[in-house]
Image 1: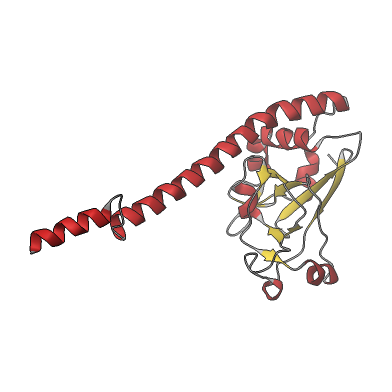
Image 2: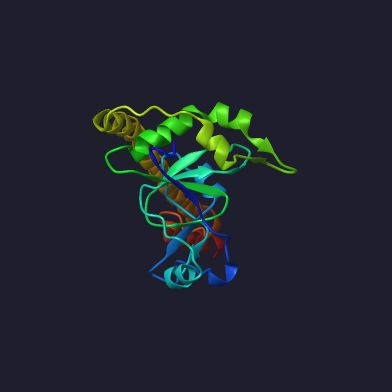
Length: 206
């Protein structure tokens, strides 16, 4: 795998550099095992965001879009996902940066998916969780077909995952609309024609 790209990892998370992305326009996500495990293809959300300048000064590397993130720890070491945008990574995540004209990020991600059972079986068990050491990751042999074939395989498989991601986001939006309507109608009691209903009730009381 090290012949297909560069493998590295992030830095520990420092809470003092955390900020609320809702209050600041320039947000840099900080990605850990949780974000990787919850993602299908791309890492779309992160609970933690940091200031770019502060973490850069601390020696944290900013990983670029399409970096393949691989979980080191957790229930399922070896889970992977692609960065949708530039991000900082925690020490619990490997970063695979592909070599141009040698490997394709999407293809590598699906190769990793095909090895999940292998990763689970070779992961060392620590006191509370499994871990995937670097040497174990490098011990897995990955195919390296021509670049065009890698791109074709990666694009074909990712097209389905992207459709699923879009559908999941649409479902979240619809669930939000449903919740808002329920609250408006049944909690705030502002259902359609509620003013007419209240007027009629007032007349009945008279």
